[in-house]
Image (tube, rainbow, N blue to C red; front, side, top):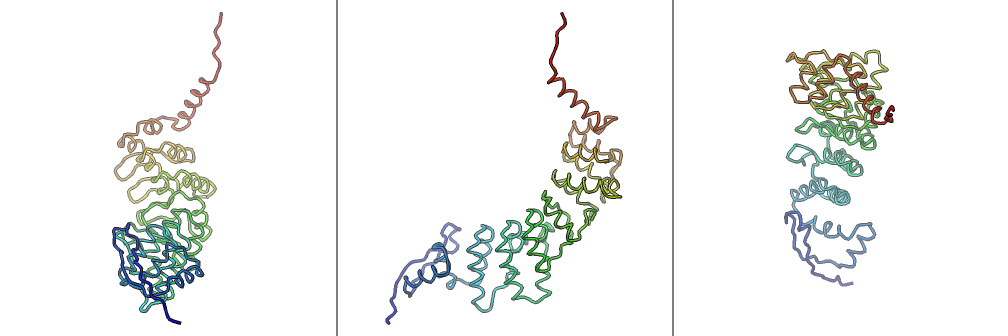
Length: 322
């Protein structure tokens, strides 16, 4: 049977800075292409992608994959990786990263693209030496985040399970916060991590949850620490700058967290390495209300009583004597 020749124009994603505009004459039966793609379950928007990948350089393909991950185009990610499996030499995903030294895996974990995460891991593991794969899997970006940190930050238990299956280091430390996701904190605890673990600067999870205003995480940690033998010591733990979580609440002006810490036993007279109490830290940062709370003799309790009396007076009926 004589093969039909059909000339048609391909323009791939002109909206993406016109980076991948490709015009070509494809000598193929269009009907066969459409049938083949339909049997593969592909959307019509991916037809041009499959036909165009063969015309791109390796550099263009890798750049397109990075853009697809950044824009959360899961079908495109899967299609490009499937294409990588058909060519030789196979591109190294570990060599693809953005300006912040974030790998495809970093970005996929941060955007919670679970299907893409597993696909990327399967591909790279099958095309890497064991030690290379391990180093890439636990690589830190410019902010010292690993893929585990990102997965915990967004609270994705499923992604954490995938990373654990492929051998990610669940105990790797950094100097950043891990979000306000209690479910992820519980999962990590069940994997053997300690809520009292300190980072390179002496900060505990309570320090970071306080610093970033993560109220759910603070409440969870305080409830857990209250049941611990050393809970009160940990609540008042100082980092390398001598700051306790209460110092950080005062520095960031978070009244709700400051009150939670005081209620659970935070001491207001501990001084940091600049010889400042939490009250002085609040005053320095112009948080007058927190300063007043911390400077009051009975501290939190007097503040709460004042608030209670104000609320009661607003609801009590007023009687006039004749």
